[in-house]
Image (cartoon, rainbow, N blue to C red; front, side, top):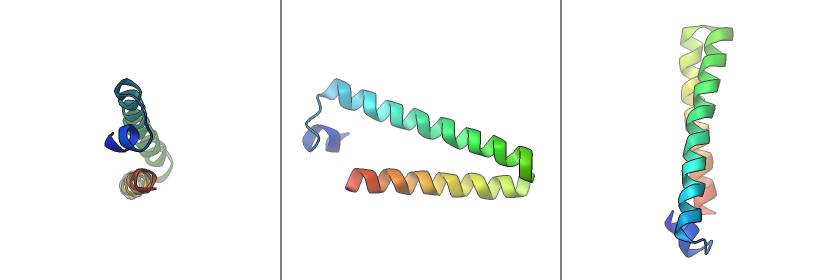
Length: 67
């Protein structure tokens, strides 16, 4: 959130909203991907897909914040 306030020049309420929306979408997307993977591939591959999606989204957020 410091990045959004300092570099992005967003006021605190807007930066808070942006961070909360981002975290909420992250959780929902991970949950959806895990359920779809489990329905179509089985439990072992679902764990692999869930871990991969978590790593991808986490890395994407990190790159976005550092850019």
